[in-house]
Length: 357
Image (tube, rainbow, N blue to C red; front, top):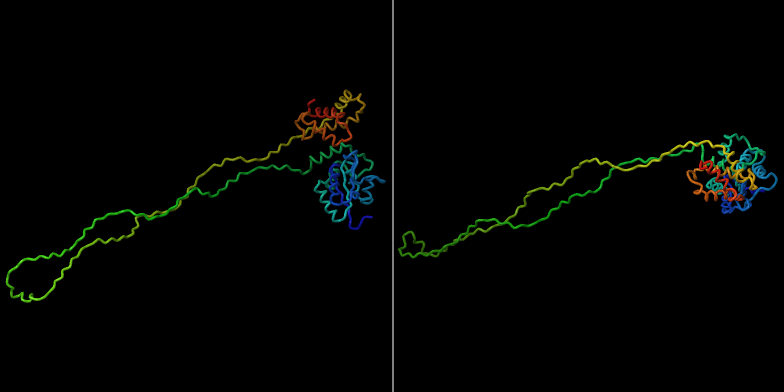
C-alpha cells in the first residue's frame, strides 16, 4: 500500500535514452530503484535490458497505466498512445518532498507536455487510444519525433538588427594656465639736486666805527645753515595691462563610419518526398537477394538512409564526409543490427535521395 505522504510523478520523453538517464538521476535524489519505472517499446541498454522497473505482470504497459490512473481515466490512454508512438515514460513513486524535486528534474531534462502532444496527435486523426493499433516501428517513431522537433506551430525565427547610436561626451583636449610672478629689472633716472655751502670770507678793513655801529661792540653770534637736496625714491604700482581668460565654443560636424549587423532569414521550400520504393527494390534484387536477408529486413536500412539525406546536419555533404558519424548514430539507435551488412543499403538510399546516384 502506498504511504499517505507519497505520490506518483510521470514524465514523457521522446527517446528511451533520455528517460533512462533521468531515471538514474532520480535515483541520485535518494529515490529507491524499485520505485522508478521506465516504460518504452524501444531499449538501448545492454541486450535491450533496463535497470529499472518493467511491468511484466498481467496487462503489460497498458495494465500499468490502468492500475496507476484507475479504470476509465482518459490520461491512461494518452500515455499508452505516447508509448505506442515510440516515446518513453518515467513513473516515480516518491515521498511528497522528493516528488517536487523529481517533477522539476523531469522538466529540466526535457519532459514533453503530454496535453500539448495529444493536441498534435489529434491533428493527425487521433481520437483515443486503440489497444489493437500496432506499435510504431523505430523508423516511424524517429520520423514523428523529428517532425515535432523541427516543425512546431508558432515557432518564430527572430530577425536581429543592430542600430547605430551616436552620442556625445566631453573629453579634455588641453587648455591654458595663467599665473603671475614678480620680476625685477634695473632702472635709471637722473635728478638734479641742490646744495648750499656757507662761505666765510675775512676782508681787512681799517676805518673808524661809525656812529650807528656803536651797538656792534658787544658779544654776538651768527648762525648760517647749509641745506642740500638728496634723492628720495618712492615706488607706485600701476596697472599697465590685463590678461583676460575666457572660452569660446565652436561646433563641427563629423561623419561616423561603422558597420552594423543584422540577421537575414531565408525560407527554403522543401520538396515533397519522392517514393523511392521501386529503386530500393531494384537495388535489393541486384545486390542482396542472394545474401539471405529478406527485402523486409533490409527496408529499414533504406528508409534510414533516406531520412538522413533530408537531415539538415548532413545537407550538402558527401557520403565520405558523414559515414563515421552516421555509423555511430545508426548503431546507437540499432544496437542489435550489423553496420557492415546494412551500410550498403543506407548509402544507396542516401545517394539516391541526395541526387548523387
